[in-house]
Length: 252
Image 1: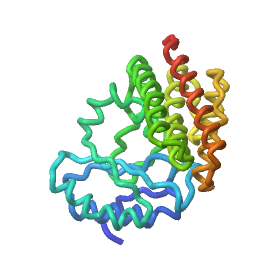
Image 2: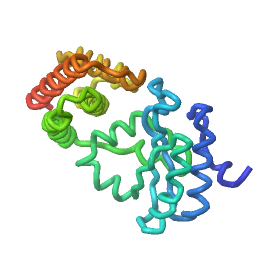
Image 3: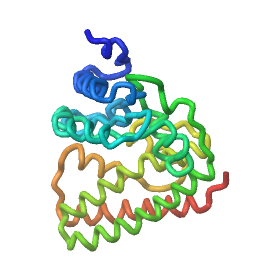
Image 4: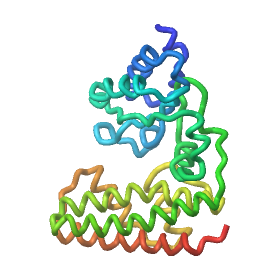
């Protein structure tokens, strides 16, 4: 066993993805040396949402300093890692994380909720956030979703396959947003998508069954009729519109 493997902490990682993560750490440690500060697994691969062959394994790599050679090293490993189910990692520095808490609170809150640092020091455990910044990000993203969904619908030109993808993308984006909204109200946040949407539905009086159903489409790789895609779009769009109104009236 290499020195790198001795430093790995994989107890919180499901057995089926440990191999790809060992490969990732070996490749990065060999090429980055002292520029590599930590590797953290985030997202669905740590929860019951994980579906082998469908779900990505997402990671955040913290570097001591940004450099083009470091980026080139990760890019060179992209295809073999992709074959192992690993999505392209997010490369950041500790300084970037600290300076970006005000604009990426939604994402960092989600990382903080569900993460396992397998190499180096945990970059997310001690982060703190301002509720006002998180509320503004939620408002901006929900209202941007409304525009994006409409543009996507127009571009689809009635193709149910394209409409389906627009609805699935919107539903997936809703999960971290509603978790951030729950956080702002000091309500415990579920870690899975369905549980998060159900709790948000109860707390904010918004119908989110269509978003839950859209995630089932993704998991089951279902083909939809034009009528099914149309109904899903209408219901998810209405949910996003309602949430955007809810966030407008948030009192913190």
